[in-house]
Image: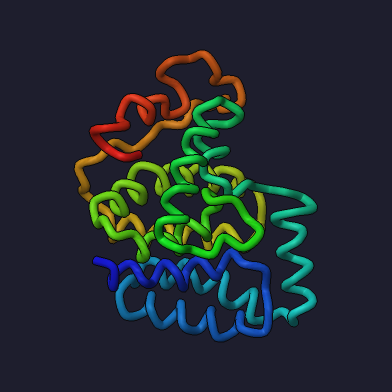
Length: 208
């Protein structure tokens, strides 16, 4: 299982700040997809062609505009699922514990930042916990992220769609609940069963 999840450490790099290794990362990702995920390959091609057609400065500017200046989306899973509700803090604390246990380098981001969680998956010692984290938390969060790209022409949507397709293939049919995000996630405080409140009830039975 760990070996099969190793690809997520590579895919996580798609959402890192661009550098001199980005070309190699994109080509390696393309090779992985071509060999195992034909549906994702076609999606990724849109991202690949656009990014490879940019110089490094243009890539850096595009990344900054997407994730910092225009701030189209957040990649912090707790915020995506729970908004400002107190459950976000509980989830972040759990993720921090998992990251420390796995010895994962978080860089300057939070423990629940999507690339950090993607890199965590192959490091986790318990296969079922990794599967539950992917199925119950990561999949619905990525679907929420993609909603933010509706009516835009931003090519990062294809990177997220690629990861979604890969995860839907790898983690299909697992016996866990997928958390449902309330439409107005910012206003979910006090609503007992909104914003993934099941998360709290499942501690002790299921991890996430």
